Length: 162
Image (cartoon, rainbow, N blue to C red; front, side):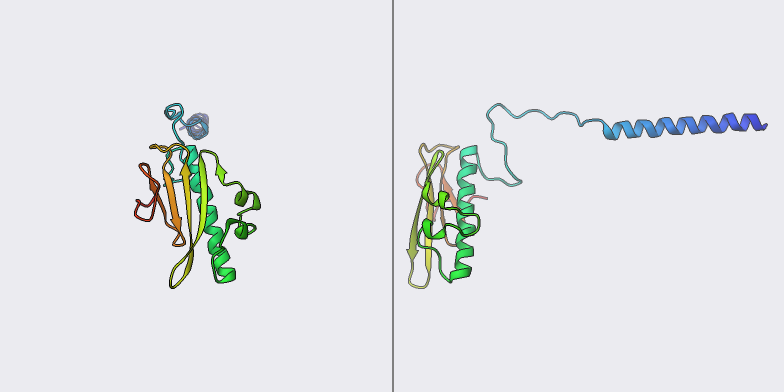
C-alpha cells in the first residue's frame, strides 16, 4: 500500500471512531424518556416503603416518628419516658411548637403516659377529622410500632404499618 492510501485509510478509521464516540456521548447525555405522570391528586411516596396513603397521612406519620425518636432519646438520657409532650420538647427534633400544636392538619394528636407494673411508657394517637382509606387513625406505644385502622380508632390490636 502506498503511504497516501495508508493515511487516507487511517483517517477514515479515525473519523468513524470519532463519530461512534460522539453518538455514544450524545446517548448518555440525552434526557431520560419521560415516565407516565401519576394521576392528578395521587399521593407521591416520600421514601421507599412509605406506608402513607395521602399527604395528610405522611404528615401524621412523620409527627409520630418524631415523637417516638424523641421519646427514645429522652429515655436514654433520663432512664424514663417523658410524661407529657411539653416535657419532651427540646429532645431530638421535637420542638415546643410541636408539643403545643396538637392539631396537625387533618389530624389531632393525643398523648398520655402509660404506667405498667414493670415499666413506664406512653400512648400516642393520631386521629383524623374524617376517617377513610386516605385518613386512617394511628396508634403507637413505647415499643415504637405504629398501628393503623381505617374503620375505627387504631389500637394495639390494629395492623402495624409497614
